[in-house]
Length: 119
Image (cartoon, rainbow, N blue to C red):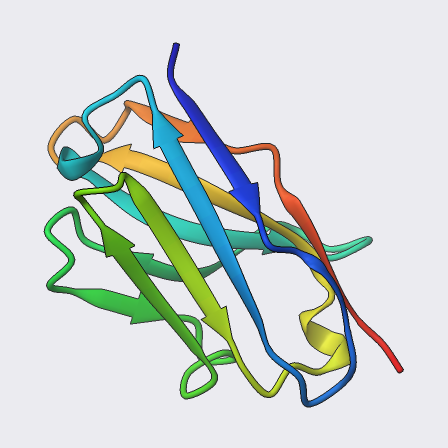
């Protein structure tokens, strides 16, 4: 069964850092583009960062450029999101998504991990 499991969320003070991780299983991870999305209360889910299947191309939302870094390890079937200089506006549930790099209709989502930035 295909699964994505996020971890690493929690409570952090403004200006702090967190590293999220997403572990994949049940599918060939290396042929999936991976992304992190987030959804804050009362807001729509938004794309935060994405990385190509080979890991040689990344994209970021303007709101996180220079603060967040997405990376992947195709030997361990994991994708990470390093988040620095966090602010209250980063508070959200963060979701991991995998999309087949050719067959775009094949995608999987994790259940999410809560990130709360508060003093």
